[in-house]
Image 1 (cartoon, rainbow, N blue to C red):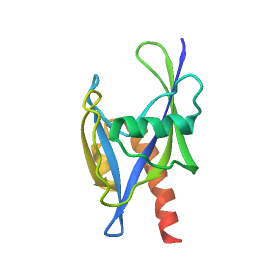
Image 2 (image 1 turned 30 degrees about the horizontal axis):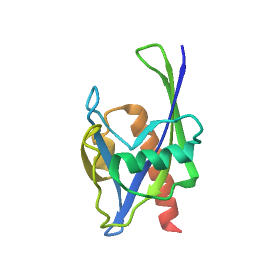
Image 3 (image 1 turned 90 degrees about the vertical axis):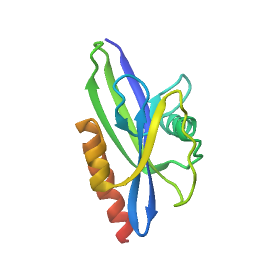
Length: 141
C-alpha cells in the first residue's frame, strides 16, 4: 500500500454578500463533483500544489489562504491510502474561469446549501462544512 497525497483549495467568492463555492465536475472516472485539487509532485509543498492545481484546472491565479486548512484521509479501491489537503482561496466576484477540458467537465458557483447537496462524496461535504463555518465567522468580523 502506498500513500497518495493531494492538495487543493475550496475556491469561493462573495456575491451579493453571500459566500459562493466553486465546484468542478471531474472528467475522470466517476464524473464526481468536487474542488480543484491534485497530486503533490516531487519538490512541491501543499500550498504550491494547491496553487498549481487551481491554475491548471481553472486558469485562476489565486493566493492560497494558509490560515485555515482541512484534511481527510481514506483508503482507495486500489489499496492505496489517500490524504487530501484543502485550503481556501478567494476570487473576486466577476473573475472569469477557463476550465481544463481534459480533466474537467463542468463548473458551478453555488451557495453553501446547494454546494453541499451537489458534492458527490460525504468527506467533501464534511470539509465544506468546516470551511463554511470558518468563512462565515471571518465574514462577521
